Image 1 (cartoon, rainbow, N blue to C red):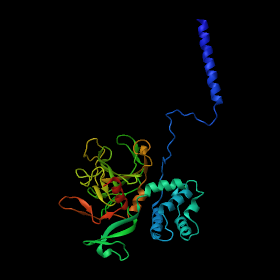
Image 2: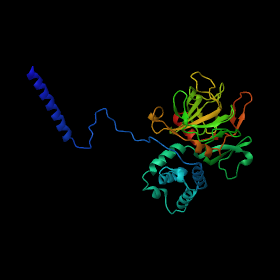
Image 3: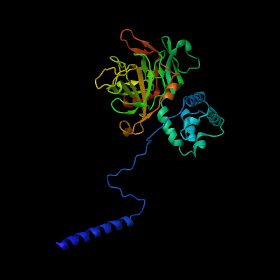
Image 4: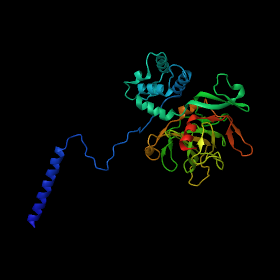
Length: 360
């Protein structure tokens, strides 16, 4: 019996020595991967969007004013360049910096490529800011009152008292329709306790029940229905799938535009629902929110694994809301159906491209 135990101990010692020998023989810095191991996928894991209204507006104006010029400034590239220069901290933003940047580029003194070639994180900020702002500025067609149509508008088409014109500029809208008052403040990240303690990952706009809510950007309905936290809510995905717009606490009994269903295509500025105070209830159609308001949120998605779970990326929409307030959709009520509709229709090229892509 003693011999057997000794042999076992000797065997274990030999095995440990052999394993130690293999470890020392293995080249350092090389990991032996199993067959099931997969290379880490590279995509942005986090975005802290701190661009202030003043920078958004100044970059936007430079973009629009140089449209169809020899040097057309791209507002997202301008913001990404300053973002890389500031290290993402726009607390030190100066309008002088934006003006000088635009001047150097339009004068031909330099190019964006030359300016940013040695900026280590420019590519990151460009991708991140494009994910936030990519669907907000561009070419589109819209109806305008006939008397407002300019001779310089190209491709004008008359429709009754309205005329279709081609335009370039801001094609995203404030989520609150024109003519309806609201109050808001920067409440992103404050504590919420219903269900479980968590951060508020959106922007609240307090207003009257029934206020028409419009789509910020063109996209398709990805979610519609009841959620115990958001009440009656809509989720609209941008056509490039980078942005998910969340509209929550919609009106009791009449929350959505009746034409909407999962997969419906909406244009920016379309009426999609009505302000309310539903939510904080596992039971449907319950008003458990004290103050009527719209909660709207913007989620960034660089990989589908980020859509739901612990890796979601939501951005602070307060400064964006200030920026978008310059474009509010005019609406009118149909007295028979009680629905609101936009007065001036819009044609977003990205929507037309999406329809072709899906065969619609």
